[in-house]
Length: 116
Image (cartoon, rainbow, N blue to C red):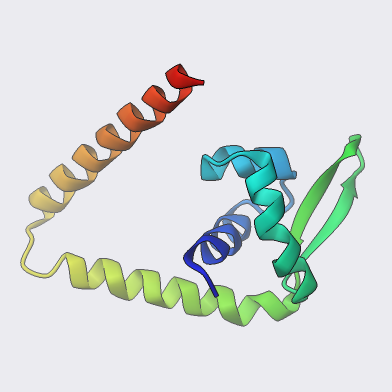
């Protein structure tokens, strides 16, 4: 499974029941790009699309029970990666790094929005 599809599943697990436009915004990708990622996940039986009761043009996304073991694997890998990355770093250094990366992402995201 691709990193992008894993990201979709992971974020969907955190934001269960959101519509496609909202999930695309969370992932910072275009809605059409998300739709292209959702199609194979839906075909594999990992994601279900249902009509949004509040907006008949939108779809609400949910994970299926088939996706739950994959979500658990993604969570374990993520947790292990974070633990490995923090080896030898103090709590202060970890906090500084996180703050820097958040600031960097914010600037990059802002720049992309200005270019649009």
